[in-house]
Image (cartoon, rainbow, N blue to C red; front, side):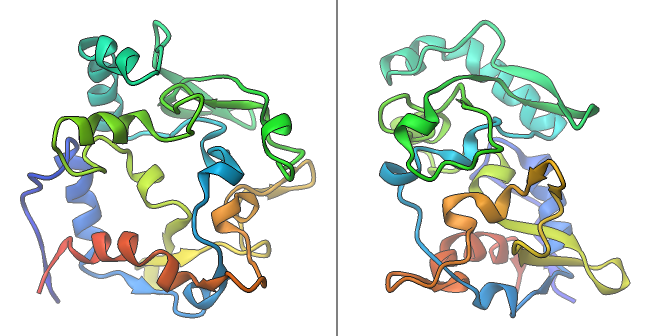
Amino acid sequence: MAEAKQHHPETAFPETREMLSLMAGEMEIDEKALSAPIRECDLQQCRGTCCHDGAYLSSEEANVIRELAETHREDFAELGIELPEQAVVYGKWRDVASGPKTATRPAPMREWVDDYPQHFPETNCVFLHPETAYCGLQMLAQKQGKPKWYYKPGTCWMHPLSIVKGEGNKPRLTLHSPESDPQRYSDYDGFVCRTHCGRPCSTGDAKPAREVLAEEIAEISREIEV
């Protein structure tokens, strides 16, 4: 088995990326799921639909982003993003504590996005640029000359990919479909499979997920020493 890398100079979250490295060393690939046709991300069309509930964070990510919001508040303002006093909060999912996440603010998503899912609230992550829908954490990293995902939480840069338990509890890299999305309930019709870049698509501009998400898959693969 390949050895996971031990150092992560290109991220603000070395401990979190180390965990990804350990999983990547024995990860299985869901080839069938990654063959599903999807469309490339188009922020002008979706306006950051996947960011509507903020980003769920590891403890390390929460600490770094909380400090980043305080020490670089003026930098974010210069980029066009006014942050609230608390940029990181503690969330709940279906009345169960879900840990730290980025805060959200109201946004007229149904006005901006024609097919915005009815079960999604009209909110956006506070780090989302209100006009361009670009990620402010990514914008700040690029302004500082760092890799674009340097400050970006794993749940964000990996979206719509998911890591689940496969056979023998081995980690499995997959793309949830409407049938497999774990967040589908009678009163909530799924998350990943309802975001624009995670929806199955049969239009002419659709491509296999492995092609559309090649950069994200390559980043995960980079965690393994060959």
